Amino acid sequence: MRHRVHGRRLSRDSSERKALRKNLIADLICHEKVMTTEAKARMLRPAAEKVITLAKRGLSRKEKNPASEIHARRLAAARVARFRTIKDEDGKPVDVDVVRKLFEEVAPRYMERPGGYTRLVKIGKRPGDNADMAVLMLVEDE
Image (tube, rainbow, N blue to C red):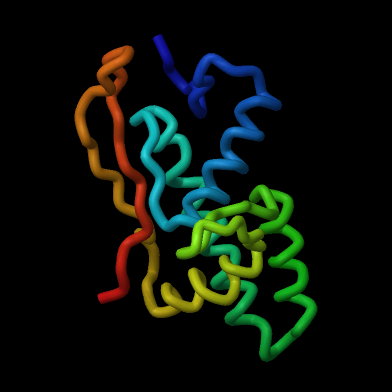
């Protein structure tokens, strides 16, 4: 029985789970959608929403106290893998600062939204091992 057991182990030790969570959040912010197993997506969703809320609070308190934005950026950098290398339209590798993208593009988009920044869509079974797959994506502003 799983009474009062918090979190998912995902067949990993704690440091591997922490690294997986950081990398998946960074990929979600960078690409704005991630295709992964359903269990990983369910683990990722609340963590990603908390990071986006942290960025929103840091930006909203910036006028009163500029140090609060810096503090929020440091907390976000501790919870997210910092840099990602993606390919641009020409196929050249480009380094993306994930924390900068979070604070300059993603969080301002959701300033008026009280929560629910992600959508989880189940997409069926993976052919190799029959694992349940899902797509976790950032919702569009409406």
